[in-house]
Image (cartoon, rainbow, N blue to C red; front, side, top):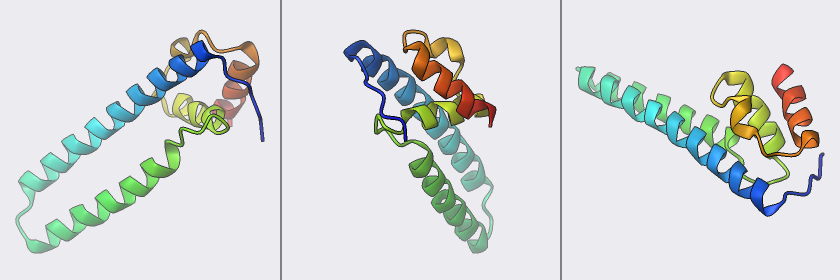
Length: 106
């Protein structure tokens, strides 16, 4: 695993990018929940929504690991998914950016 050293400015940048991506994804989950809940007509619809939320929560909890040792993987995945743009990571060392680009290309 990569053991990058993070400067204070890199930590602040990483936190901003991480929090913004997480907030955007959670807003999407809330919007989808509201749409599905409004359309629910049968009890089975409720259970389907609940199952979907449980699955989504697991996926988000797995994806958004804010440990510095994992941020390269997290940002690489978010970049690949289009949830962040490389320009948002300007300010990270070239070593970290190169690692993130490699992860994004997988």
